Amino acid sequence: MARYTGASCRICRRESGKLFLKGDRCYGAKCSFERRQAGPGMHGQRRSKPSEYALMLREKQKVKRSYGLQEKQFRALFEKAERQKGVTGGNLLILLERRLDNVVYRLGFAGSLTQARQLVRHGHIQVNERKVDIPSYLVKAGDLVGLFPKSREKSVILDALESSGRRGIPPWLEMNRETFTGTVKELPQRDILPATVNEQLIVELYSK
Image (cartoon, rainbow, N blue to C red; front, top):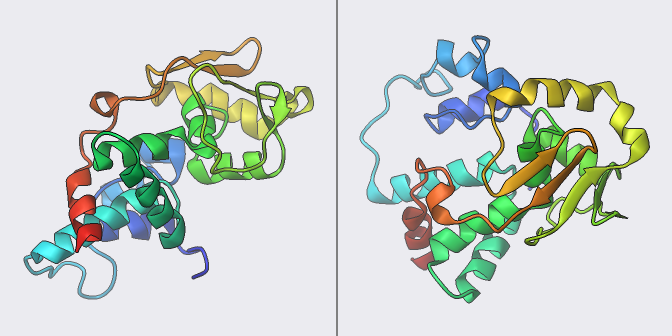
């Protein structure tokens, strides 16, 4: 299936929550979801009580769309989390957070996750001083993620860094604005990841 190219705010309304798909815009007064929270379509305001399956499906769709993944990518990551030791749902969220495009966004190099993915694909990002242009690359503890010298002058990156303060940087990452680099201090743990996600519903959905 092709990647969704429609309005991002429509997705937020469909999932009944802010997914921060437009980055910094979602934190301000211009956020469209704040002005119109009803579901998309002519019947968006007449939602019936969802079934148990619908709740599981919506939770999976919400997480999948938050990280900008397609179904095949998300399912592959779930299967990887299932093979790891520990709780499958927690493992899944940790793997999602470890993706390079997500780390680039969390560090503030990009204004949105979509923009972060473009920076990675276009070769602006280096990991441990080597170019990595694969958005799904999983960072490890101790990795140094940064920009190439020429990329540091791009206005889109400078603007993103300037406005990233309102988001904050996760405690498992450390940012050095002078060198345009970020360090993965440790791998993220479930207790510091978004509490709004009920990953157990995703596990139950894939277990059916």
